[in-house]
Length: 93
View (spheres, rainbow, N blue to C red):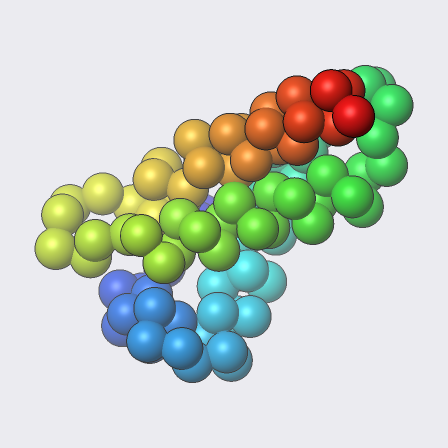
């Protein structure tokens, strides 16, 4: 479902914006699934989507294609962490 071509990941890591956008588009369902976990906490879905997308981009940049791990598996903790960090920081302000 969320299996991505390692060549696309490597190109995105090297700064290819089209490949990065393609990866985000291909993983929109995954990103929305994380957003749904945090709904009902007083934040707009679109805002949470943007925050999850930032976490996904960070995961792409740090992903090591040498290991036998799917990008989606690697990215989920980054996305969840990004949203939790946002909620934590937002409440302290």
